[in-house]
Amino acid sequence: MSGAPAPLRPYAGQRVLLGVSGGIASYKSAWLARLLTLAGAEVDVVMTPAALEFVGAITFEALTGRPVHSQIFGAGNALDHVKLAKAARAIVVAPATADFCARAATGQANDLLSAILLAADCPVLLVPAMNDRMWAHAQTKENVAHLHKLGYRVLPPDEGMLAAGEGSGPGRMPEPETIFAYAGWLLEDHHALGGKRIVVTAGPTREPVDPVRFLSNHSSGKMGAAIAAAAWRRGAEVVLIAGPGNIVAPPGACVVRVETTEQMRDAVARAIDDADALIMAAAPADFRPATPASQKIKKGDGAPAPLELAPTPDILVSTIAARRPGAVVVGFALETTDLLANARAKLGRKELDLVVANDATEEGAGFGVDTNRVTLVGREGAEERLPLMDKREVADVILDRVVRLLDGR
Ligand code: CTP
View (cartoon, rainbow, N blue to C red):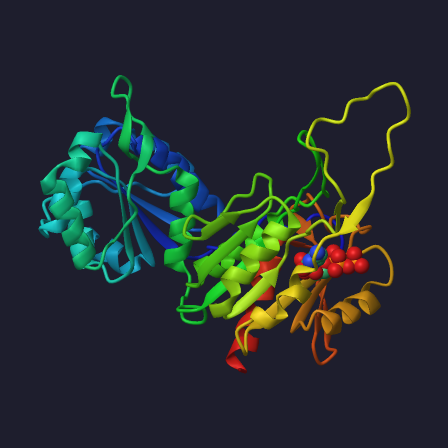
């Protein structure tokens, strides 16, 4: 197979109900509706009468390609609340205003959206967004505590710029991408990885030459971030140890940022003693300048002094003793020649259960791109060559293997 893979539609066929209540943050809900629709979900948007004062139903209809619901009364709407609630695999209310939180906490059903919550039998995520003083009010706090008790999941607001003229504080609705990630978490089956602790590494490391220069590589961290996101969505507790770079971490993961290979080794050693799995997707620098200069190296007049290099620790090898017995360990092998022989050698030398091998010279594979073409090499020698795939799909295949290995322990 060649060429770019088809766009991912991980939620194809899944009905997601997006509730929008009447707050200014509802302008961001349009983008959330778009993200869910692009991911393949069938999005039923339900707006409160107050939400219609902020954003027009037509915006959501155009983005989702489906009718928007807002009336509990009226000809043709009888039992809409029950039908919509039954059809939903997950419900996300974003924004959930202070008023909506109060109504949901007291089980009121005086509009379509609040009635749906009472009739629902699926996971519900409420995303409160309001002015910082309203969020800080004791009544709101009590309402939110009660929402937790009732089994609703509540994504707390971010701290940041509020609506025009209101300065900054806690109350701002998290970005649609973050809410979208939580919607993915709601839709996923948490059975296989629930209660498991998974450590994932991602990205390059940097070894200082002097205070302004470093040695590194082209790793973007996309593969590791995709694995961390997939593991979190499947219910695992995830520690993502990431080198420098713009990694988009899953919102529910504990992220540890490191700079050098030695720092990554220390972070891995600290995290793995109670981990069920370690997935080393990072590309740590293998060498560092032996004696980094404490001041910037100047051009001077003559030729630059040759850079003397020293090896960095091999993280997988040097943390073997720190692994929890029975932990599943997955390594990567990025090669330019003899892919499978090199991968098998790493499997033995680093005491791995699985190696994800890829050839850096193949188009669409390796660093920086969104896709990868990998071969999975198992401990018993079994090899599985996968087609060119989006890194998020590769992450799912790797996690399927990790689940199987954990089940066999
Ligand atoms: N790795 C590691 N510590 C290092 C370098 C790599 O733990 N200092 C891990 C990587 O995260 C990966 C695996 O080892 O999971 C293989 O990495 P790779 O760069 O392919 O191989 P190296 O071990 O660096 O060996 P070589 O450079 O000889 O290919």
